[in-house]
Image 1 (cartoon, rainbow, N blue to C red):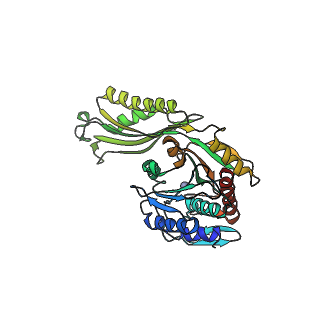
Image 2 (cartoon, rainbow, N blue to C red):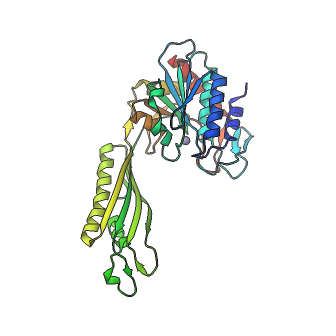
Image 3 (cartoon, protein in one colour):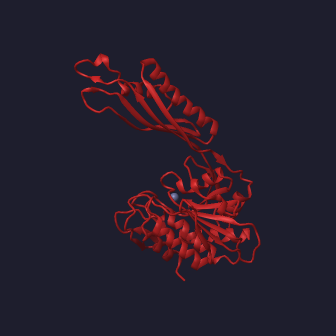
Length: 356
Ligand SMILES: [Zn+2]
């Protein structure tokens, strides 16, 4: 039997940048069949759902989740294990995010002496907007409780996340020759600037933030710019605050447009809604006990980033994020220690045994 580190190294050698996860999902499907006797199926989106039978248990099913995709540069990753640390040899990420998560799930489940029925869910497109989790065919999932192995620190249990609202804004003014007859024009860039300076932005309060991330406008140096487009976002751990913030942003643009005679079009999307699971909930208690079982002091916390767990919560499955030991995710300095891979696997094993 391969060790968890060997499993992990096999996984990172299979390229799976977002959008190109097929080979990795095939590998994961075969691995879960071989190691856990799982019945694997793909949903219409391409997410893998592997049904694993219970062992010495007739408890309710639980889900263990990881994502298949990686960020860039993730082609041709060559893992190197040195002094108990795994790094990538070349100019790539390591892809511990999130292959460490899946390796730990497999190792934890196959070493458990008893376990409840498990749905192992491997999602696509997590890094590009939690796409797989949003499209997951929930009817194929038996579990009402899920553990997503995609966090960093082993002692942290992430129990909630924010509402995230995206705004695509287009300001339309009037084009004119900037040298010959500028008075006939109406600068969309200037109108956008007016709106931005009158809009709350940055850290709004301890749980709310807002940002204009991209601005593009104009075509030529000597033309009054007719259009200006902006991509903005806001998020808050409090859903109502996120709605209020996006309203303030919209109104700033609408006012600046109205005052200048420009028009504005705003396309707003609530990408996901804030949710925090009670610390008393069984899913949180089970995760906390599993962390404690390896001698760590657990911390339950909310974060202001989106996770597959938050999407699952939005879709009716109580889900938390477990730590994996990943360090420096989304960079070429990404690494993970062998010890953390092993400890995280033990956390998963103890978790399953406690729920059996
Ligand atoms: Zn991740």
